[in-house]
Image (cartoon, rainbow, N blue to C red; front, side, top):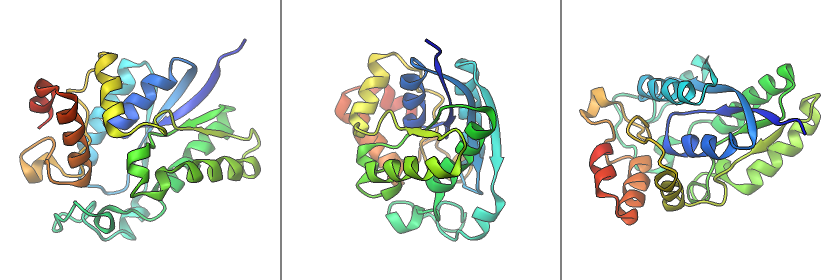
Length: 219
């Protein structure tokens, strides 16, 4: 039986790394896509993503989206705004919808089966573009917008952040190079600032896992 193929949306963070590790056991992932939409942490996300893609022997591509930065005016892209701990401060207009569509373009062009995204249950509580309904709607949309009827896979869709951390630890994934922080180290002096929404979820999950060593490595 021929192995299914796909492309992964790779941010360099915990969720996309674990999603990749789960998916690659069943799917031949041809491309890893990292997006530049003017986010503060982009350079560090890119470094992390390249290291992850190289380790898994996947071709890495960078997609530039300058228009998305132009229409976004919040703390995720604005270096003068450091209010990164609430929903309105970090929402990017139709971000995951756009990312999935770009992934589907690759799938349609190269006849790949799946777009893989690091959506998860815990973040779906605040971000609707991480939810089951969103993934289901995307699948339905691609029936009409792609010739090969691209499908979406979210390996962590049923996971909360603690489950994702526990998977990474139990499968001995290297987490020292991940970038799951909305902030840039140049602005905070830390790889993970500990203050943004993403950091708080990560910190609490690691703390609850009892892995103090990992907590010190990342924070």
